[in-house]
Image (cartoon, rainbow, N blue to C red):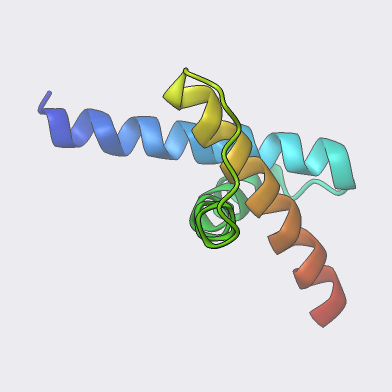
Length: 85
């Protein structure tokens, strides 16, 4: 397996975990695909928001930071989707 493929797998797993955590926090479900989609979109949204506002968590573990960013982003995505729908 190449490094690029491993990176994609890790990215999708982080998105899945973030989507699951967001569904636990704000409720709802959506199943596996719903969690994956909200988590992956949330990873982009969370990364943008944390960078835009200059928020640093001070955590040394990059994977944990990415899961937190993606989870916060997924929460924002789910709440915005509820407002629209």
